[in-house]
Image 1 (cartoon, one colour):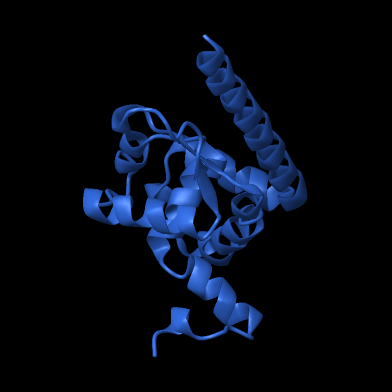
Image 2 (cartoon, helix red, strand yellow):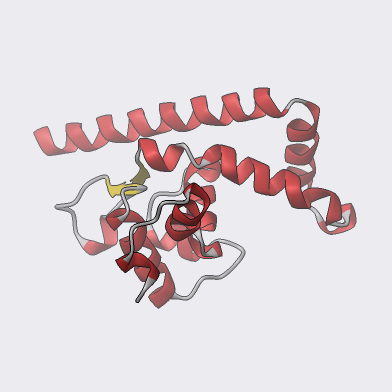
Length: 153
């Protein structure tokens, strides 16, 4: 019996079922922290996800209610994805995963932006999280307004 076929009564099992693969978390990271919305933008991330895996993960994240299509009637090339409220709630998890591993990464391989993020998040984790949440919600609202204006035209 597949895990998805049974009722998950453990909160950790349910969370790992929803977010359990690294690609899903990296897509959500790119959405929430880097404001990526398009297939090509996710494809160009430094981790170099394969197109078939990206297609599958976007569908899975959509089916699980973590992301949604911003403009479902657009052409394939112009489709944009945004995080739902459930998807936005993963920001805390993404930050905790960052904190779990950042001290094990040699700073000599980090670029200037990565060093700044490390400094900010370690300096005041809550302020960093609140800032990123506010930035994403503003970005999301602006994106929704742009799509609505395009539909009205």
